[in-house]
Each structure stands twice: as C-alpha cells, then as structure tokens.
Length: 134
Image (cartoon, rainbow, N blue to C red; front, top):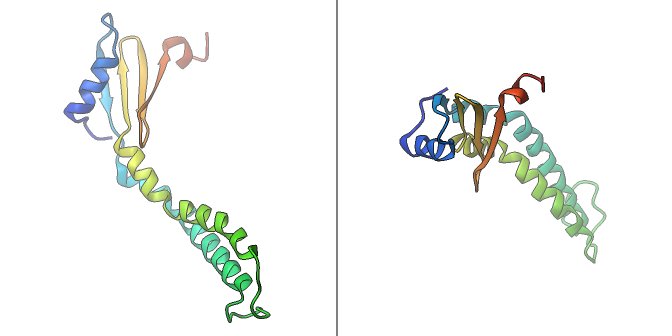
C-alpha cells in the first residue's frame, strides 16, 4: 500500500461526515494489480488469435482448412469475439488504471473504498457491516 496523494486525501475528507475523522488511508500498488491481469491477457491472446483465424478463413483467404472465397456476412460473426479477446488482452491495463484511481480509508465510524476507471464509485461499510451484521 502506498501513501495517498493530496487530491485523493481531499476526496476522502469531502466524503467524511462532520462527526467522524480519518484514521488511515492508502492506495494500492498499480503494478501489482496489473500483474493480476496477465493470466486473463494470455487467454485473450489465444481467444483473439482463434477469432481472427476464424474470420479470415470464413472470408476465404488462403489459409489452411479454407475452401476458397465465400460471400456474405458470415466472417463478421467473428468480430464480437475479436473485440472480447482484445478486451481480455487489455486486462493488465484496465487493472492498472483502476488501481491508480482506488483509495481505501478507515474513519472513526466506517471503512470507505473509492474506486473506478472513468468515474469514481464510493462504497461505505459501517461497523455492523464489517462485523457480519451483529
């Protein structure tokens, strides 16, 4: 965990109620979170390669197991799979970007998580939520 930057500290302090004070805050290491996306990225590489092969073979390019030119929109059915594979390939980048905007805070009354890539969502956990609802 890294120390929190000034702008993130202000974000935390703006979220706190007047009757609570900040006890601890930190942000995750983006590199460590990016590394967690590598297995999905490797699967995405295989997924994208297969979908691209399917698309080119269906379009009739000279590839193994291809029976010549074909017409129609059949090759375009591979496009969503290529896009999904590219999304998986970028998993380390998404994890890195999300970790860069994430911050954890503990106040006298609750724990708060600020996270998101394009917009920040705030989740708050009060004492009874942390203790299993007792």
